[in-house]
Length: 227
Image 1 (cartoon, rainbow, N blue to C red):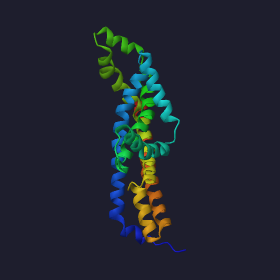
Image 2: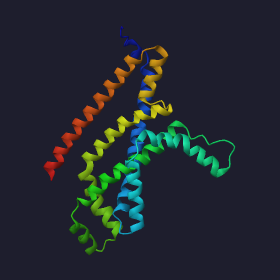
Image 3: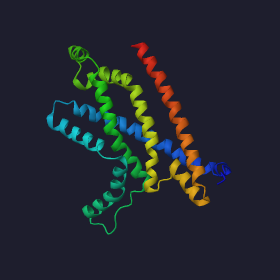
Image 4: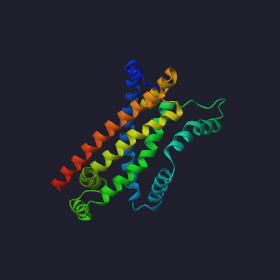
């Protein structure tokens, strides 16, 4: 078997579009996951029992199910559920790209929740009591005192989870979304060069993930020195 890596060079524009979508999905899912994960973390730490139980149930559910199943369920089942609720003749078309964005935010929020919960709990309670003594409310104490420190403490772990998220975006291939892996697979099937395309994708993922992991380790050492 001979390798024809010229197919990669010929397909770079299409591969670049797929890579752009992968990066876009990673950024959107990370931002949404951190936002909703922080809200879930605050809910889990809340003294309101029903709110804490609801947040805990959601987190435990999402962390117990493979991501690919969440993608499948949302892509195939949600349109059918919406059709039965609305009485429409046909299931609404959500689309692969919107499905990927929504499911990744929902899924990643559970993991970012646990990261943020650990960060919040790492802050000494004395600082919260001091904020109360200054007349700050619970929300102000969290927003001005606790969360900034929690984010700083959890930056390396948050970035590590984002690297994992970047790798997991390749699962959108199962619903025919044209991410980096999906673009490479379509080209490989068209030209009969799946091996070359998959090797190229693996090398790109390895280089990017390894570089980012190295930078995260250096950042973690700097943060440790500051502490």
